[in-house]
Image (cartoon, rainbow, N blue to C red; front, side, top):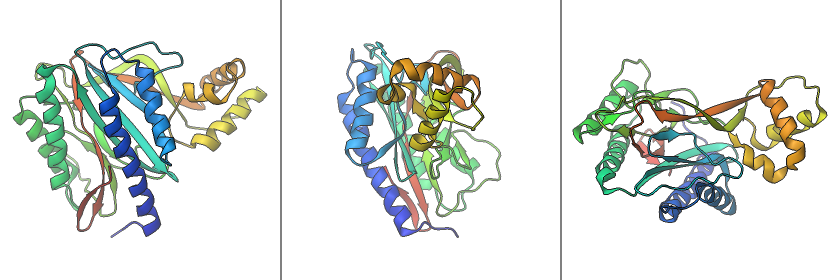
Amino acid sequence: MRMLAEDVLDKYHRAGEIAAKVREEMKKTAKEGMLILHICEKAEGMIRSLGGKPAFPCNVSVNEVAAHYTSPVGDERRVPEGSIVKIDVGVHVDGYVVDTATTVCFDPEYESMVQAAEKALETAIRVIRPGLSTSELGSEIQRVIEGYGFKPISNLTGHQVGRYTIHAGKSLPNISHFSLNKIGAGDVYAVEPFVTLTDAAGRVEDSPEAYIYRLVKRKPLKMAEARRLLRFIETEYRTLPFAERWLEERWPSGQYKPAFSSLSASKCLMAYPVFVEVSRKRIAQAEHTVLVDKEGPVVLT
């Protein structure tokens, strides 16, 4: 039975406390008409001011967008009136990652969908334990969501987290499925039900947009500035996702753009496409990171 060392556990707890504070502050901050960029920058700045580092760029996903939207450089998009907004923040302390999300609803018609996501999350946390199969957990999540009269997103999952790794090892589907995977004592998971309407497709697809990147491999590069930028990304973010606007803050734009294009063309970086619901129906999300202790679940966020 693998359990976490005390110093590792302490770092997870510190990261979780920061993430929870930021999530709750963003719930109060988000308003109709507000620049999405303002929400992203405020969340990321607050993480740093509290002593953590962003584990990925703050995601602000509106209506049918499920995940992976963060403001690009100079973003002028605003939170629409009557929208449903998912705010997803990640924090790491010394590489130990936590991930948490909430949905802010500006349309009373969709409040029950938000409640379904939150109740499904509560239920998952109540039942998760060492030895539980991921298929049983998915069945419980689906049962709660459908009990509220909604549909889970079938191809978005919760996930195990690791050091400098957002998606590590096992996935936690939010639907009934066949799997031999079991929850292990000492594992840390981001549990995140995604909920949509019953007449929706209930799946997400890649959109053409992508504003989040991750280093995936080192390659020989001809351009000296590209080599320098690659070293910077490797040192600063390791294998964690980052936003191009973070580079602009630290790098003269006239220099980083050709270097960034070179890294992208050479496949040193991967891009995360923005996920949208196939039938363009609205989505709600709730998420906590949970340590599965042998005594039971410990909610870190």
